[in-house]
Length: 311
Image (cartoon, rainbow, N blue to C red; front, top):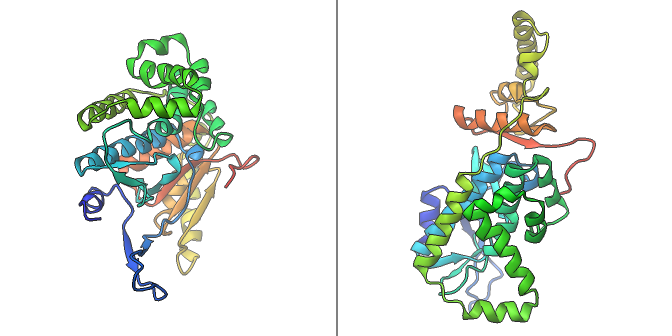
């Protein structure tokens, strides 16, 4: 707290704010404190996010690490589970994931690559459905598996070459933990080199693209046989029903939301709307619309109701 990092993160809206709670059982010699973070309306998981959500979460993590380095601190944990979506954007929720900076490798580097870079590259280069592997790998996708699944053309991307392919080979060569730890301790990486590495990863992620396909559910309302009058009548019917719910619900769940057309209508009469659909392209379109329109109380998520994501 004394480093000034907390205040900087809050000012940039990168970290969830908290207040200190009195500990009436605290002994006089005990210097620990209890913090109460601001409440998140709905907890989501990285394997429920669309490509752009995961990409924004990755870039948020790198921005936090850069800001931490500027305050002589460093992230010691770069798990995707430390991020939630709040007020329409990703926010870091683990206040205690920081340590004093000391020259050497970034301790969270491997975790970041497994949680963010690996699934993003697989989506961009191969298939969106490969990100579902994350449900079986809670600490991120193994880099050796990611390297094997990626096409040869990915080797011509320097960022992916260094941080996926060569990283995976380094892990295989130093798979003995004691050897790897000894090797890591001998590496000298100062703050400037670390910032340069973070910037390279950041550039790599920004340049990753996923071409959202035209699908039945993404384009449902434009491709169905709804006439304009019929669609207006349906919206009026839903709106009339929503107005009858008093008091207004704090949380509304829209299952099979397609591109979120009616989720955004429900958002006018609800504190928060979780908008779920099985179609990745539909969720991507919904999230893009939320960002473009400045909608902060709709959370688009990928969800297969016949095979729900584990809690």
